[in-house]
Image 1 (cartoon, protein in one colour):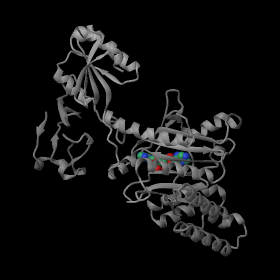
Image 2 (spheres, rainbow, N blue to C red; image 1 turned 90 degrees about the vertical axis):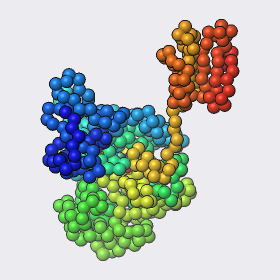
Image 3 (cartoon, rainbow, N blue to C red; image 1 turned 60 degrees about the vertical axis):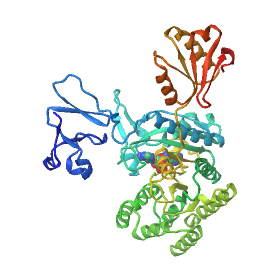
Length: 504
Ligand code: HAM
C-alpha cells in the first residue's frame, strides 16, 4: 500500500520510488538521490508494484493481488520518446540537414540500424567498440545496433564496386545510432546523426567542401562564429612524429586512439599506454609536444626541428604534406567565407582509429557542451574491410548537442501544430457531407482535420485553437442544400458562406 512517510523514517538502504520524477526507478536507493528528491518519496513494501502515470506525474501503487498492472511508460534509460512537439522539432532539424546537403549536391542514402557485428569490431581499443549494443539473433548470427554510420556507408560503397559507382560519390544520411554510454547533457544511448561523406576525392578540396556544409548549417540556424567554432588538425602530424621515431605504420590507429584520451586520463597514463604500443618515451614526449602546438607555423617549425634532431631524411617524416594541406584548407576557408569558424588545434586527434588525414570537431565557444560534430579523412577504411581503398572524407553531426546549444542561445524555433482547416458537421446527418468537404480540401492540397464525433460548438472552437486551424468549416443542412458551407476565418475573426467550388 502507498504510505506517506516522513523523511526521518526513511531508511537509506530500503527501496523507494519517487512520485514526481519519472526518471527515478524502483531500484534507486535513497542515499544516491539529492535531498530535495528524498522528500518526495513513498515507501513500497515488497508485495506492491508501482506504475507511473506520466501525464499526472504521479505514481499509482497497486496491490499485487490486483490483476491489472501498468507497464513502465518510460523509454529505456538513455533513450528518448518523441511526442508530437518533440517530433516537430526533430523534423525541423532534419529538414535543415537535408536542405543543406541537397544545396551542396549530395544524394541521400539509407541502410539498416542493425548490422553484422564484424562491421564495428575493430582492434584499436576504441571506446565506440566497447559501447556496442551487440547480440546474437535467432539465427545465431552476431549482430549489432550501429554506433555510427561510417562503416555501413563503406559497406555500401564496397557493395557497388568500383565500376558500379560513379565517383566522386557525395552522399548524406540521417540515422539513429546506439552507444552504451553514460548519459550526460547532449549525450545519450541513442542519437541521430547527420552524415555527409565524399568518396573518391583525394585532395583537401573534399574537406573544404564538407566544412562549408557544416558552417552553412550553423548560419542557417542563426549560429555565428562567435557561438561555435571548428577545431581542425591533421593526423599526418602524428604520423610524421611516429615515422620519425621509427614506429611501425600498423600502430598508427591505436596510437591515435590512446592520444585522444588525453582529456580523460592523465598524461602519464597516456605515456604508459603509448609505451605498451611500442612507442618509446622520447617519441611519446614528441607526440605530446606536437599536440600542444597552437598555429600551423609552430607546427611547421616543430616538424622541421624534429626531423633534424632525429637525423631522419625521410621527407614524409617532416610531413610537408600535413602542413601544406592545412595551409591550403585555411586558404579555401577564406575563399568560401567561413574562415572565422576555423581554429587550428593540434590536440584534436579524434577517437576513431580509421582517420588518416585532416580531422575536425565542432565546439561551442562557451565551452559548456561536448562536441557538436566531428569528422575527417579516412582513406584506408575500405581496404580494412577487404576492398580496394578509396579516398573518403566525411563528418557526423548529432541531433542532441545542437538542440541544447540552440536552447541556450534562445534560437529554438516556435513550431506550433497547425493545419489549414477544421471541418465540422453541424448535425449527425451532415457527417457524410463533411467527409466529402474534407476530402475535397485534402485533394486540393490543404491540410484538413475532421471532427469525428458529435461535439458542441464550444468544444470545436477549443479544438480549432489546439490544432492551430486557420479556418473552421461548418457543414450545416440549410447551407448544404444551397451548395454552401459556413467558413469562419479564425485569424481575421470573419464568418461567411462560401460556395463549395470557391472553398479551396
Ligand atoms: P563521432 O565523433 O563519434 O564520429 O560522432 C559524431 C557526432 O555524433 C558527435 O560529434 C556528436 O554530435 C554525435 N554523437 C556521438 N555520440 C553521441 C551520443 N552518445 N549522444 C549524442 N550524440 C552523439 C562518428 O561517428 C564518425 N562516424 C563521423 C564521420 C562520418 N566521420 C566520417 N564520416
